[in-house]
Image 1 (tube, rainbow, N blue to C red):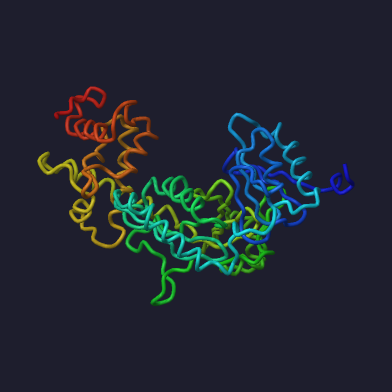
Image 2 (image 1 turned 120 degrees about the vertical axis):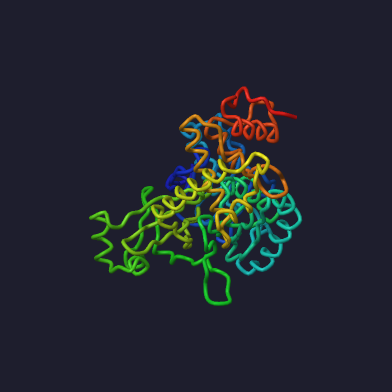
Length: 419
């Protein structure tokens, strides 16, 4: 073993979101042009060959000084960490380029326009035709330094299943079809109501990608450290007031859901303003729209859920089911984002009905054209322990739920659904 191998530092850091992912962080970058991703050993890439030779490794991604390794579920990191570190050292100390000769696999910063065109083509040809069947659409808004910003619209905006649609469907499709994507960011305002889209300058679309200076945010021993001189002005505070706010509880930091397994989202909320950022595996970060205050939104949602319940109970059976659009208009909701407000309130009624042991009154509302509720209805019913039976189709399950809501005395399990 060489002296360099003996003294090469490799730090292992687990993922806060995915137990199958581990970061192996080196002292110096080995790839500075985007991200390289491998799902199998490549013949000209010594590092990929060495890592996939370790039993239990199923994927790897290299960005900067970080090597992101994915393991199989049946293996554990206690056994894998040492052989993975040894494989990395072996590949780095061979003398050959660990990632092989330069290739076109990584997209450089100058290729953002080409990447944007490629992403848009994949979305239009492969993703959106399927998403359109659920009343939604995904558009590529921008690419900066290999980071793709996507905006969801229609039925996808605010849908309970939108995160799964993006991460499990669209993201996998794009990464497979467009090499070199560093990250995929959802810039949709899913909490928007009367004004669902953030606005930038007059005549421009919103600008979500704002890089954070390299020395402003860092992770030390698993803890996020933010430079007070950078953060304080963004919260409308002085650095001294920011530090006092952290001590007194007037300023709070929270981790946000919705990121991927290797991306960390955080928000810092002060007395008057909020700031949020997403930190990528290579340590770089960019600002994202902070979540809105929840108290007022939750109160409005609860009030709307009460109105929706009363309206659905009063409708004669012959006018059911009612579409989300008609329901919104019946309640006097006409502004953009109204349907999302209605579906969110319907989900609130589902939580209430589940707690009370009642049939889902939300089954009386459906999407336009399909004759079925949105995907969020089925996903939430499953999470509440009242999803479809093992061999039951979505259509059959929905008809049973609708019939149970109209004939609550029959009970869901024994509801006799007319054909």
